[in-house]
Amino acid sequence: MPDSLTKPKTVAVIGAGPVGLAAAAHLLERGLEPVVLEAGPTVGHAVRQWSHVQTFSPWEFNIDKAADRLLTSAGWNKPQPDHYPTGAELVEQYLEPLATRTPLKDRIRTSSRVTGIGRVGFDKVKTKGRETAPFEIRYENGKGADRITADAVIDASGTWFSPNPAGANGLQAAGEHDSHDRITYGMPDILGRDRARYAGRTVAVLGGGHSAVGTLIDLARLKEQVPATEVVWLLRATDRAKSFGGGTADQLKVRGALGSALAGLVAGGTIRTEAGFRVGHIDHEGERLRVATGAACCARAVTVDELIVATGFRPDLDFLRELRLSLDPALECPPILAPLIDPNEHSCGSVRPHGARELSQPEAGFYFAGMKSYGRAPTFLMMTGYEQVRSIAAEIAGDHEAAGKVELVLPETGVCNGPAPSASPADAASSCCAPAQPAVATSCCAPKAS
Image (tube, rainbow, N blue to C red; front, side, top):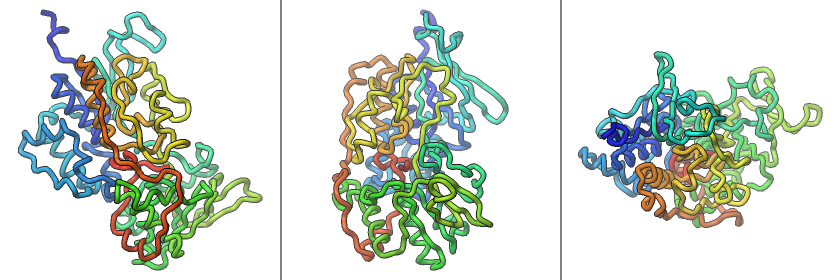
């Protein structure tokens, strides 16, 4: 019998985060051969960037079932299901054991940044016979260029390293690039490794999503310790209610507490708010930053020492240029998903379960998974990603029935566009104890912001 009929299909998985490693676990269970390419030096490289952040969901929702089975076979001590892990705990207690103590250890290549994916012998234009040609994945591994071939590809590379800019029109604000020494994107560790950078300074946070909320709360804590610290919230929207969220109606209680805490801190004057602030220019003013809207002659402006941009993320599509993709023109996600997750219409994160069918592309054998599958939408849940890759692995293995049976129960936000919950400064103080996390699955896995 020819090798092509007996050799297991090889599947390249881009990214060794929670969803990428879950994909590898499901592929392995299906008798397929995963090869995981991770750009960072270790697994969970993106998660490590928000290691200080607590997830919105407890361990019971953060562990993939196939990964659990692999780890249990290796004698793993499962974390307490009701504990809310930080990013560091997610890596140390789950991702690292999965990558080092199970059969996945021989299938992960770190420091391997994918630079391009195509079809062997085919450019993007050529069609006849394309679907049977293997994929060629090119990557840089620190020693130079290398390549592998695969029968299918799952892109679970996430969006963490492609943050949105400060500019309100989706482009960098004028002067933003030249001010990079005073700008941080994402969620810096305000109370830990980055404390010295922000203590006693005037710090502006731009954004209205969970990343911004968590960062603002940490800065308020820092102000309690160092009163000279000043906190300015730059919000593009004119209404702050959406950022305050669902409060006690949120089934993800830690997430709900964040909004309530922020509302109390704003009401108590700890955080100064500049709503309707759409950044157009950023300039150095001596050793400080002048962050302004509109034209220089009539701009509304604030002067700060540091700017934290928490305006969300976008997918990196550059290395997929030679593949035939179909993406929603606004969200840059698979078109079938777009109406279900469009932040113009949805703020709850209640999304119909979906799998291989919705995530497939015109390029046969290529799938998006994890946060990258949501494009620019900020409502992704980690457990959504686990169900995605379970379905995709089944489809690649030829089990179309299992791939089509997509079932998932997601926590509801409870309040979509309703009024903000009331919160006193005392409430905010008591709620402050639980750090925030960016919207990872409507908030559960890896930070996202809006």
